[in-house]
Image (cartoon, rainbow, N blue to C red; front, side, top):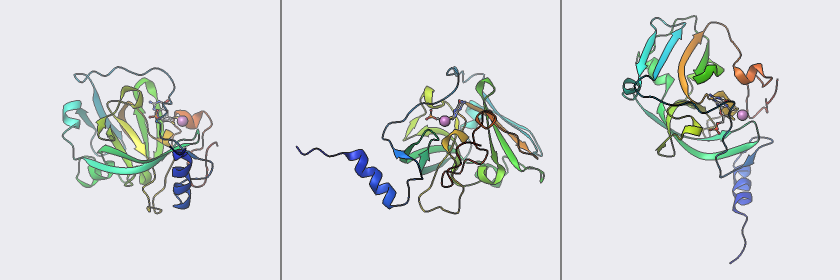
Length: 211
Ligand SMILES: Nc1nc2c(c(=O)[nH]1)N[C@H]1C(S)=C(S)[C@@H](COP(=O)(O)O)O[C@H]1N2
Ligand SMILES: [Mo]
């Protein structure tokens, strides 16, 4: 047997393909990062709410949420703690699709979105980023339901779709695990990590880590 450092080889390949953002390293693991405990999930009481700068507020039960149109995306995810994970597969609900198909009716004043998760955790993004093809309300990772530590039953996710340099790609903290709702806002409001000093824009290619 010849010894091969697969990780380093894969990382070099990603660097050559211009898929490794500055200051990042490839991992084949899936680290778990969050503040506070993992919340329990009760499908009988769980709901997902849409409010703020919308024509009508929405509330979907877990059963109703699972009937919304579904989307699958493959993307590279980049954590501010410097790990990157490539070709990750996510399935769930696209906010863009919900808006296009009239499930969410935005007011013209809507310009920002605050993801609200269990225990008051929040993450903010501009509306135009939330409506991109690389932002998803995800229920599944690599073909399986999310695990509890990665946000089961629902989380926001954002990453880099290879070749889609027209889209803004942010660090992974801009996806809230254990997501319970979206608040549409006329003015930006910093989320949990943004209040703690993380960069508001968080563009991985510009290395916008801390504010
Ligand atoms: N609800 C909640 N979501 C969260 C966080 C958190 O503390 N609470 N941390 C964020 C951070 S800092 C990161 S890097 C990613 C990590 O996701 P992972 O544990 O699936 O790797 O989740 C993000 N979503
Ligand atoms: Mo993070």
